[in-house]
Length: 131
Image 1: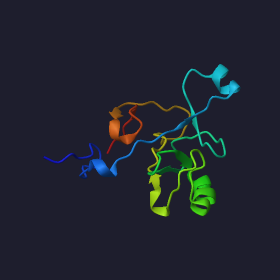
Image 2 (image 1 turned 180 degrees about the vertical axis):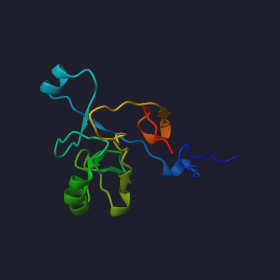
Image 3 (image 1 turned 90 degrees about the horizontal axis):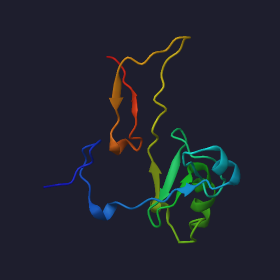
Image 4 (image 1 turned 180 degrees about the horizontal axis):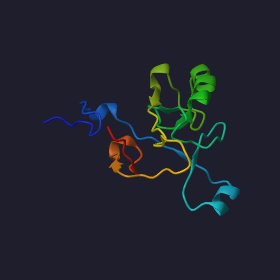
């Protein structure tokens, strides 16, 4: 029996999976103003959102915005957090989640909901589109 991705249904192999590590925003302003955790690029400190292109290093699992990955790691060949050496093949692009919003006008109302599932990285209930 094969292990398959619950979203894409492709076969998964344990040796190709790796843990990823997000950098939590622990700034004083963020800590006092929000109950939810937010995560940042450890290089440029920009808040990571579901519309930002992200890259994970398979060699150590640290996550960066694509801009920093292209600018620094692709050139220096080292993780900016732990200094572990990395090659171009270690840069793994992470899929964007999307915003879940599509609409316009003054009065918008959700009439149906769809669970995106655990494999989407969101695990939230979002309005479903009617076809």
